[in-house]
Image 1: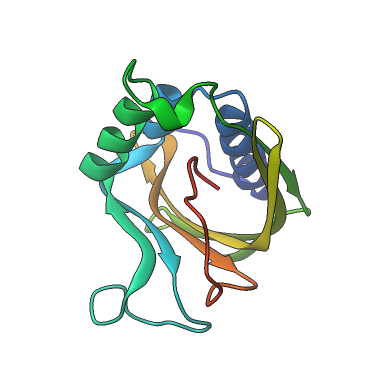
Image 2: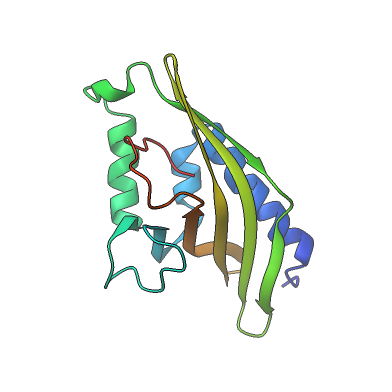
Length: 160
């Protein structure tokens, strides 16, 4: 088994964003562990997704439901489909414990979501809590902190 390097961690983050931009949602979902969560806090420095309201706090089942909705024929809010683009700052490895196979990577981003003539830009930081499973990296937690997390938002259709 080859040791996970800093480059592997950084490349993983870039590859994950590309899957989203290309709307390869099934491949993206396969990057998550079975006990994974996708979390978007509602407040700055929010510590607990269960005791406080979040913009999103979805387990793998809810992520799958959202992906199925995005591809559904009767999902009229997605006719035509939304598109997105991630512009990422260079990811930084915040923590790494090779013995446990656990790694934390933080990335600043600009994310654009567009549908028809409406374009919305979100800015923030993503923290990936990654684990090694059978020699591959998997997402155990993806936390998306928006700069204006406490603003009123329209529907966020896709994944940041």
